[in-house]
Length: 92
Image 1 (cartoon, rainbow, N blue to C red):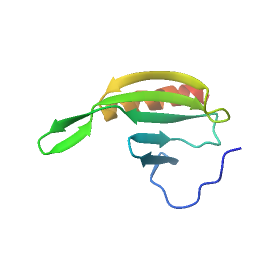
Image 2 (tube, rainbow, N blue to C red; image 1 turned 120 degrees about the horizontal axis):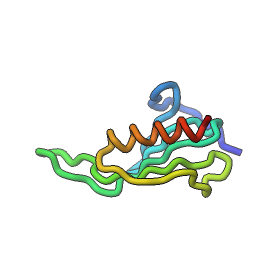
Image 3 (cartoon, rainbow, N blue to C red; image 1 turned 30 degrees about the vertical axis):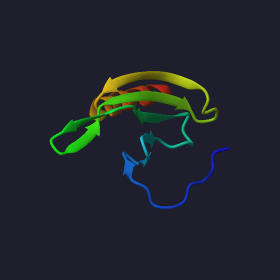
């Protein structure tokens, strides 16, 4: 059973979006699946380092060891975009 998380978190489209280190989790664990984005590398743009290579996983909420779909993309924007599509399809 998923633990109830208390506190205030950033939300996107009504679902929690949480980052810890290089791991970003998105989705409600009460849903069938949730999304995990792992930042694998960064690139330097000007004085800033931005996420470059992202590993995407749609994971079963009841069994987090069960990966429904996975892949990778360059850039956080593209990775999050495709991850949202996969997550929506998996939760239907």
